[in-house]
Length: 392
Ligand SMILES: Nc1ncnc2c1ncn2[C@@H]1O[C@H](COP(=O)(O)OP(=O)(O)OP(=O)(O)O)[C@@H](O)[C@H]1O
Ligand SMILES: [Mg+2]
Image 1 (cartoon, rainbow, N blue to C red):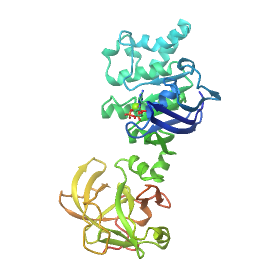
Image 2: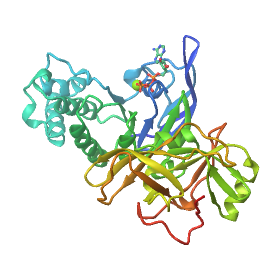
Image 3: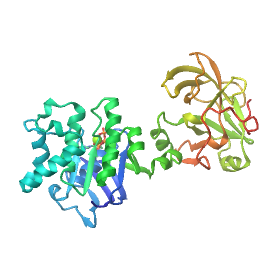
Image 4: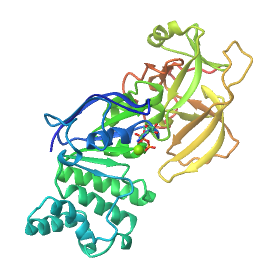
């Protein structure tokens, strides 16, 4: 096992920059997840660490050793690809043993390691089968087994679960976490699935357009996103954004407004008459009657998920007041946990506490205000009658 350190890693393909100035250090034994939209450079980072691509600039250290000039096979990393890449004509046992045999490992040790790895991954009964005789999840386990059997210093996993159906995916996710707890190998895991990133990672690296946006624990990137991109990428459903403005101690959304605390006023004073965006997590919004809501909305979609219900509503905030006009009816995602019955088309009130508001600079997207402490309120609790929120 070893730490992995990237120092100002950049990769350019045909004059197109794929990744720029990527620097981070993964302590020995940690599980880090690289997450971001398609094309943001996740696989490029992984392939650079594995030695599959010559890098354009920067340094890669595995342990204390700079591996820039070291060929892939000497780096002692194991990579699992999305398509498993098993040898189709070899049995499961042969697939597992192949890497060890190539390294002239004594046959008795190969047998012993194949058997222990197969047991750890519950594929002992499949050792004589060919890959085509396995389900997707079983093939996935063999691919993982082939990587861990060598006890590499570093494990690189590139979207290893994306070919699996939702249920198997979530089962394999738990198994991967348990496996990492057992073997403790430094792991870098690439995904564009936010839930996978949140549940697996010791730390998440959020990437966009080849650059790091934020590095943090799952709780940090969820509770303290540095910008709009991170806020809307991490979390499911993504954070709601509403265009707003500030004047005379009031925050305006269309023709609706509410008063804010002195502390928030001090922060917003430089945004007088200038649009910004407020951000609200789906679980930070409470539904009220239309009369009691800070904002008013129409229910578009009701999705019962069992433990909770996901609602999509359209804000009805147009009006002729003194407000700054906003884009056409923004939609909000709301999570409720009670069993109230709601009809599509119903008009509801939307309320929230000032303590759960994020505020983003419209031009740069950077977060200029966030909840001072993690919102710890019960989702959908009744709005506090003494709160500073008011309706127009
Ligand atoms: N060998 C290559 N030649 C030219 N361009 C490449 C090459 N590999 C990657 N790129 C480009 O570099 C950028 C980053 O690609 P990369 O595969 O790292 O993205 P990704 O985050 O893994 O995306 P996805 O989630 O779709 O797998 C993309 O714009 C891609 O087109
Ligand atoms: Mg990729």
